[in-house]
Amino acid sequence: MTPSPATHGKHYRKTLPDLAAYRADFATAGVALPLPIVPWRAQGLLGELPPPPPGRRGWPWDTETAPFATPAEAATWPKLTIVTPSFRQGDYLEEALRSVLLQNYPNLEFVVLDGGSTDASPAIIERYRPWLSFSRVQRDRGQSHAINLGFSLSSGQIHGWLNSDDFYLPGAFRRVAEAWRKGAEFIYGDALSLDQASGRQRYVPAQLALSRYVKFPGLVPSHASFWSARRHQPLWEEQHCAVDYELWIRLLPGLRRAHLPRAFGVIREHPEAKSHDPKIRQRWDEDAARNGLAHPELYRPGLASRLLAREFVWVQAFYRRWRNRGLAARLEALRQECHWPTAPEIPS
Image (tube, rainbow, N blue to C red; front, side, top):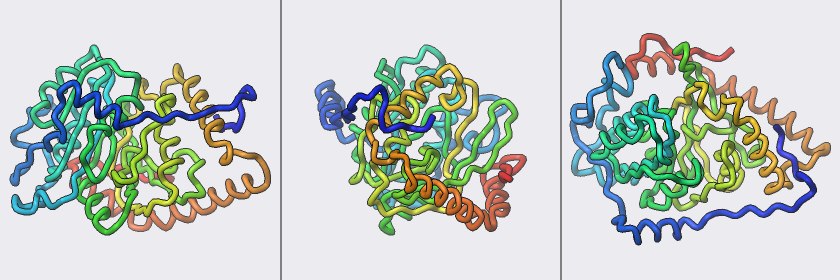
């Protein structure tokens, strides 16, 4: 559904939460701040994490990102805070957790907030608790609320969030930190999509994220995006599905951006995923309507809007062709790094 600047003719006011109030609530409840960082080992964490389930091979099960810092320099890397909201994704959660921990990033704050799952998720979180900065299994008000709670605890310099049915790819955190050190405030990469039923993986290039293009869906993937904590903004908790889309509208303009030529994360396609579940189509439509009401200046019809849409299509097609140079070699290198039997498919 395309957002509309008016729904039922009513005026709409967007209200964002106060993350300082969330942080104060945690402190009142006895949470010690700042949170501890994830344990770091010069030899890597693979040997001390719980063993993978039988039959699981490759990244992030029996391979890891090679540690790249010495003990003396570990604390000099910028602190990276990752928040994972979790709810009834027990089939996939462990893969997400391992993909964060096996980055072997030396200055990592990792927060996992589960909304009260009744599947295997609480047991998985408990099993990995020694390597988490903070975790909680407790009912919340949904994905956006959980992410906001997590970032309210952050003491990191770089932020990112990973949904519990997605996972990161090896080496992502190091490349993000290196780009941040060079002055980038929003760092994003490309992604893969994984069809859970068939096991097929496809390459999904991100787009050129100019400020003038923020109204177009799918601009950058949340599971391959990171930003400066100084420029962080809370998620709009009334949104249930298009939570990253609305955040990019507010967050991206004015930031120094860096699009790195590498896949950073994998989005999983499965029947229970919000993006593929027809039962929650109405919530996607409601989110789109709220976006139109909250940001009416972006969706005014007319010649300028039509010209911008044509420009967007043309620019992104050119950008995609330029970015795809050497893609087959990069995907083969990724296959070898992940110890996968086949490389991801290149979209036609």
